[in-house]
Image (cartoon, rainbow, N blue to C red; front, side, top):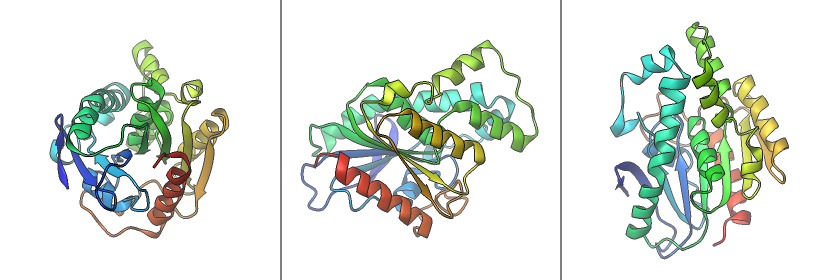
Length: 257
C-alpha cells in the first residue's frame, strides 16, 4: 500500500496476516533505488515478521527537486547532504506517529534501515534517541558526510572549500566520532566490496568503533542496490537479495516479534 504520513510518501508492506506487529522503517538511496517504491522492491524484507514501511527521501519521487543536482555540485555539504538528511530526520517523528495511528503496529522499539544517504538518516535517528530503536542496519551508508562531499567533488571536478559552518555540519554527520551515541542499538553494517573505497573504509571503521556491531561484506555489490535510474520498482538483483537475506537474519535476532 502507498500513501503519505505527515506529508512523507511511503510504501508499506504488511506482515503476514496483517495483525499487530513490530515496525521496520527504511530510507532509500539517492542513487538507485531512489524512491520508496523502488526500495521496497529491492529490499522487501519479506522474511521479517513486521510492518515494513519504506519512506520517501526528500528531493525524490513525488517530491522530486530538479534543482537538487546543481545544488549538490555547487555546495555538496550545505546545499545537499546537510539539508536532505536534516529534513528526513526532522519529519520522521510526525510521520511515525501517523503510521502508528493508521496501522496495527506493536508498541515496541522499532527497526530501521538506511542505504547511502538514507543511511545517514537512519544513523541520525538512532543516535538522536528520539524514538527507541532496537536494531539498525545500514547499507553502503554515508557514514561520514565528509566522504560524500569528497566523492561529489571528485566526480564533479570541483574542489570543495570547507569553512567553519560546513565543518560543523560534517562533524554532526560523522558517525564514527559519534559511535558512542549508537552503543545501545544492535548495529549491522553492510558494505559492498565494489562500493566506493572511502565508503568501504568508513563502514569498517564504524563497525570497529561500535561495540557488538557487525560488519558484513557483500561480494559483487557496487554502490547502488538496483539498476539505474532506479526510480521504479524492478526485479531484485542477486546482490540485493543477499543484502535482504542478511538484514532479515539480523532483525530475526534483534527485533522483538
